[in-house]
Amino acid sequence: MNTEQTNNKSISVIIPVCNEQGNIFPLYEELVNTLDNKVKLEYDIMFVDDGSNDDSWTIIRDLSKTDNRVTGIRLSRNFGHQMALLAGYDFAGGDLIVTLDADMQDPPELIGEMIKKSNEGFDIVYAARSNRDNDSYLKRFTAKAFYKLMAILGVEVIPNHAEYRLITKRVLKHFLTFHEHNLFIRGTFPLIGYRHYVLSYGRSGRKLGKSKYSVSRMFEFALNGLTSFSILPLRLCSLVGFIVSVLALILLAWNIIAKILGITLPGWTLIISAVYFIGGLQLFFLGVVGEYIGRIYTEVKGRPRYIVDQIINNNQE
Image (spheres, rainbow, N blue to C red):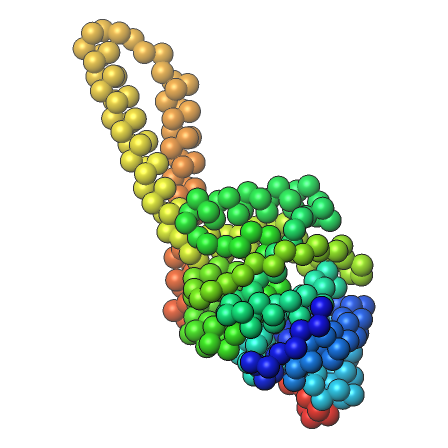
């Protein structure tokens, strides 16, 4: 789709990269073809290298030397996908900002449709996959459970949306006022508000490389989303604790009555089971409370969320 743009002057494309040496140049070619022939806006492409240990940075550096529209930002180590995105947002200068992953699963040609929706007055345009056929059963199941749980907790998250989105400059201005370390970007933009539109698209499978989201990373990501936007887990702990206390009082009353009536209760197994059950609940609740306290501890230290090692652009390092 050809999308002539007159209302906005420029667009910045942010691409977080971690060990994607085989995808960077093909993605660059697709982006340039789309932006030159279909979008026709002034643009810049920003690759954020999140501590790659392959040749990703060498490829980014070479691209920046041959194309002054390409900027490379190299972080001092791996700070994680969310922090790499944040670094890109911090340095973005376009009137419109698009983010997409470097795994070649997000079609760059969708950017034209995003800009069209932006011209219609939408400040945020989310690209959400229409199906998850390329994902494993475990990933589909956990993703579905995650979105349902977030909805129960009252957290607004766009289902099946990863990081492929377009935002306007005024949305970026408000986004950069969020300074927490445990930043859950997918939940932050709905929190900001403004008009948004959801574009559905078919997401292809990964052709090269492998996903950086292991089961443990997906669990950590989901936990970060839950604790960043809701204190309901703490309230559930209080509720369950209250219910267990009431049950314990009822059991105590029954034991007193039985003692008065001379009834012998063979309760050794019951007592031991109750002790282990309540002990397990206490440890679990301590873990939940500790998770929140740990995040408070991380925030109050005030350490930088990421550290930039190098910025290269237009043959300058």
